[in-house]
Length: 303
Image 1 (cartoon, one colour):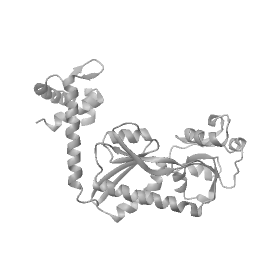
Image 2: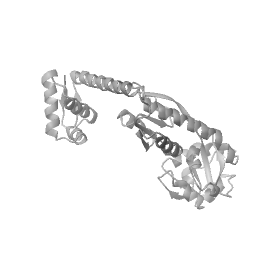
Image 3: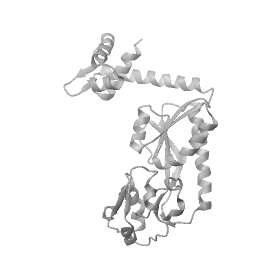
Image 4: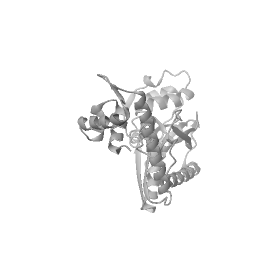
């Protein structure tokens, strides 16, 4: 048997490629990490080739890394099976884009209020950070806008998203010059979203970068405040617009075609009973939102 501390030091060395970074991550000294590796190498032979700027695993090191990952997966599967007796008690972590995250925020609060035994951690992040967090085992599942082609992930459709052009109430958008007149309220995903939506509506346009920028906001929940104040237009996902409280101050002259949002989790690890319960409740909430949203909305122009 190997000491869990030795294994963690080796795993972090293999992940970071540095004694310094591994020690910082573990809260240990470099000397302690080195000692753990020496203990392993006494039993297994050389595991690392120490180079001036990087570390390289030997064949024995790669074999031991596979062993460590298998042990970790087995322990997680055991934990999931032991926890399956009670789906209403435990911690669940999920990470989502900000747009659908806003739509899920209140249902998650209601779910936790209804089930005090649940502890729910919810983080907003872009796709790449979501996938990295899942690989680092920081969260149980995530929602992304593009289906990953990495075999380490299991992916299934969770809901639909729609991009919308959002303008101040009373504004008309019939041609590209109307957008020039309004000005663009930009956000981190704004140029890509605007290019995707407006390219279909205004073929041959000179590009989103040619539009005057009237503001930049990196908080998804605050973007529409600028639009409602008459400062310009933006392009955001529908879920973000539906979460905006001052709906009468904005309008949606153009909406795009639906595209899927993907539920992702580590392929080799089943979801716990708690995570499965939370996920099923969220699916029902999203379906109810989809069915109800047209009742109070104007009909936008399709792209």
